[in-house]
Image 1 (cartoon, rainbow, N blue to C red):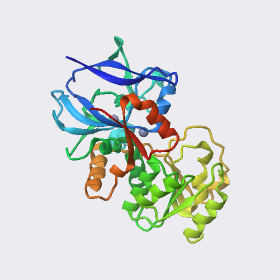
Image 2: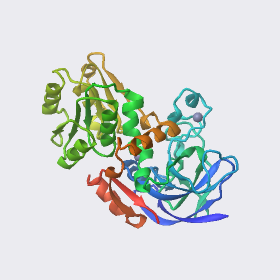
Image 3: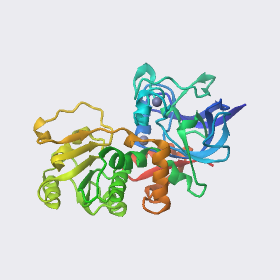
Image 4: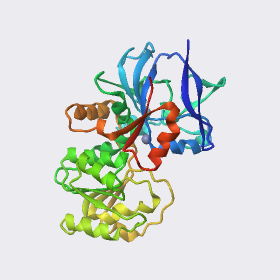
Length: 371
Ligand SMILES: [Zn+2]
Ligand SMILES: [Zn+2]
């Protein structure tokens, strides 16, 4: 049987349309999911310039409609979160504990650009009679999606879909960068540069790790107010365009025994701030670039003096079954906030408005909801 599904489709020329695709029934290790909510992040906006046809969206939560014969960990009717880095479980990276870097399933764009040497997934999705790829193999801005079963993690039916939908990117990336990548320890000082969707989850991760102080930096007062809600012990208002952070560096030092922070997380996606974490940390401290800057940056090597480490983790080193369960457990014990991060929901037909609000910085997270 074929399921008809309304979806946001980009042709890779900076535009998208809302149109119908058809989705196949699942084969042995696949599941058909009815998407109920899909979180938006800047990557979705960027995906419109990837110069290929795509069903957009890479964060989502929904209900399993059908499961293939070999699928064991979820069944029809289960509520699930989707995960965009789908582990195969047996390649070099998966068995080395780097499921997020899977060599078989990583998402690859046309022309072999992308995140790994993975293979094109069968996704059983047709647009105007031709196969179409799904963003990160999951394409969540669509009423239905067909994915490998390793792309879904089941959750309790009591969790609202919009809150669940943001776990599989922004929350995981922020939380995981602190807990899995930097492995922040109690009482360590943490600076978070950029308090948007990802930065707020770095703050939550730092609070859960027991860091202190946790210093949030942003150019918007509203973002700093959210930072405080998520657990920042101090906030600093930065000036737009002040890339060397002259005042901010001094203020951070005065809050960290004059040395600089143990950890600084860059969450702004601005190439001009790529070196900023190194300015904010002490000798032997760690800078972590979380926002996915990919442009060429010139570094003054003196910024590494002395003994500084600069990490560039992908997706908070996500192991979906372990980490999503951990995040949901913290959420259920009211230690990690999700509902509060969903600023606004929109129907798929208002995707343009949702992008506008995201780009103007109005939302911690905007979420597209489906009936
Ligand atoms: Zn693998
Ligand atoms: Zn994302």
